[in-house]
Length: 271
Image (tube, rainbow, N blue to C red; front, side, top):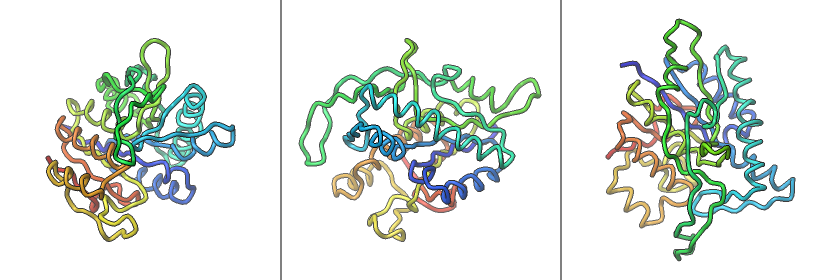
């Protein structure tokens, strides 16, 4: 079976020109089949503020009202995605920008209000607005893009964190979830490695010390890390998706620095 790397890069990296250039160069030289999934939350927050739209986050996830939905659609599917695609084309990578709506590759439904743990430890009912929880992904269509059967040029998908509900509505979907969804959907077609890369060297015991990388995390140690408060905020959905990917047949999941997308270091996720 052919191997493929699904690389998810955080918004802080793609929004800085120097780190983005480094990432693009590394991704362009990454051998074999590959997909890039990106975030862009900080850009969305900044542009929303310029438009007078306030951003709200709960448990590391964005609440998306109608105004914010317009912002994330423009920023994720347009500004950030096309900037990355253009940079990859300049490196000789035949990239194509996609959202979940394109080719119907990822369909979702609007998340119902749910009880969520707040930062102060209390529970509250939260309506996330136009946020999509994934129903399915069409790995077959993605695989046909990457491995065309008619000897045409293969492409490298660059996936923005937007899905659709099949009723004409775009929905904002967590980028870590998008990466896990893509990785899981491709397991019948490839041996998949999923790499979450961002500005840190992995999951850290001390967020201010890049040398405090936790080399491996399993389900038991993950529970303890959450209890101890070492893992919190946006790292929780990332790790939840990582464990879900491993359980669903993804061969390897690593969380690492964006300069190490071949995942020679960082935090490896184990069952």
